[in-house]
Length: 203
Image (cartoon, rainbow, N blue to C red; front, top):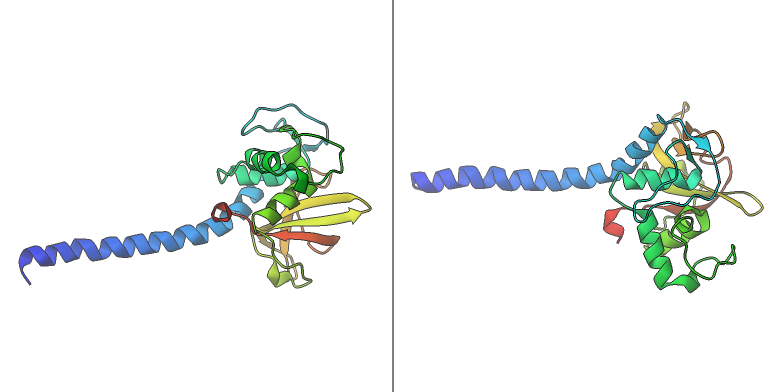
């Protein structure tokens, strides 16, 4: 092999190795990004406030110091450049009949549709993001989204974090159930009604 060919291989082989490593790292990083984004939200002081807010579209948000459980999910995904406000609105506008009619609406509302747990559940299901609902904590991975029924018609949503419970058996949840955006060991405290693993490759 001549000197030129050898030099070419010296450059080409490391280049392809770099690309393959970069691709693997990107997949692994994406899986943990949502968990990390959610964890960072716990550093913000947020008061639970279920009020109706008018907001920009797309990328609209309620005031930074206010929010409910769905706002945790919306804000965490937005750090991954995924705008659930826009995505839910577009899907709901095109497929209004498949979304819940709990609130008696006859058309979409970009201020509130994405902030309702049943609508997010429908959206995730339509994106083939559903995962099995089990009582095995190993089935719930960092970055997964979980929905609960708190009793009656009250639903709740949160994100599986990368922090482990004291007994080492479960991941903590980042959610806002009334005490702001907090980290708690509560995966099986309520009845799980939805389990999703939604990321960029899902749409």
